[in-house]
Image (cartoon, rainbow, N blue to C red; front, top):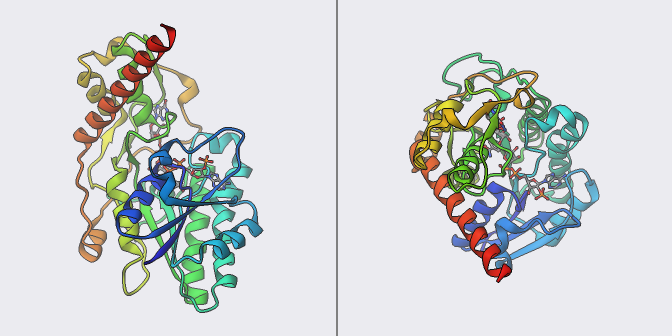
Length: 331
Ligand code: NDP
Ligand code: GDR
């Protein structure tokens, strides 16, 4: 039986990865932060099969304790301040957690695991490509990050490559393009739009305020992308991979699909709002997943249209359920 330690287990990807590893018979540990409210919504359904250890990527010692408690074969570093917009208002925290946090975990593994037994996965991002240098983007495309988040991810990416080359660690970096699901945080544009369309169709809200509708993203399904993370740690040699669908769509197209899924005309409900525009934008992301397909045998299974429908339906169901429970608690 293999053992994995997942940082960011309470996040979107952490929850899907934990499910996948449990299915494969892993013993799964998760690093969780202390909070005054419970943040386990995404792992509620599997919590009795997980072992949670308390820690924080900004606290070096807690990472040693987590390694000692879990004795992992594999470490998946998914924790981060992951919202791009917030990285402009909290650039130092983003640099500390999303960037330096990677070095803290690599250092903890380097010192704890002298035999180089532990395999390490770093959650790198297509945001590292930033300002368009080539289309589509692959493992050889140069980085030009456009936000403090992107800058921090570039640091974490090169730290991972450097520890592999300096110390012979099995350390890999998955350069994942946007991936979404019904568990996506409500602040990210896909979920904001599917939740907004569902709310408006149920009469719970009247309008949806958005920023740049022209940005283009390569959107896939998170459940597909965690399979690629696992595959990257099962290879003979450590290497870095782009994970993407190879298709790109505008934010406007996302909006059109979500609103038409609930039978509404988006033009009647969507308002542009300067507050959601970014100081520097990433205009066009589309990945070339050729290497992941050839070497890992990885393929995405959910296309963009099915993803949007899945998310709208999940939001409708959740909101109808909330309404029912509000009514029943009132009677
Ligand atoms: P989420 O924002 O959903 O989850 C982030 C996780 O990190 C949460 O569990 C959060 O804990 C945890 N976390 C935040 N700060 C700290 C900290 N200081 N110490 C320990 N844990 C912390 O992100 P996703 O699941 O979407 O993404 C997972 C990773 O993949 C992130 O690193 C992200 O940057 C990266 N990525 C994501 C992509 C995507 O499209 N989803 C694409 C490419 C990369 P809490 O619940 O307590 O807040
Ligand atoms: P992104 O995701 O920045 O690509 O980072 P997000 O969904 O936040 O934005 C995608 C695009 O939509 C435009 N947009 C809006 N975005 C938000 N959040 N809210 C709005 O109202 C809005 N209107 C337009 C944005 O300008 C942008 O162009 C995600 C995160 O998961 C990162 O952690 C990850 O690394 C990258 O994907 C790959």
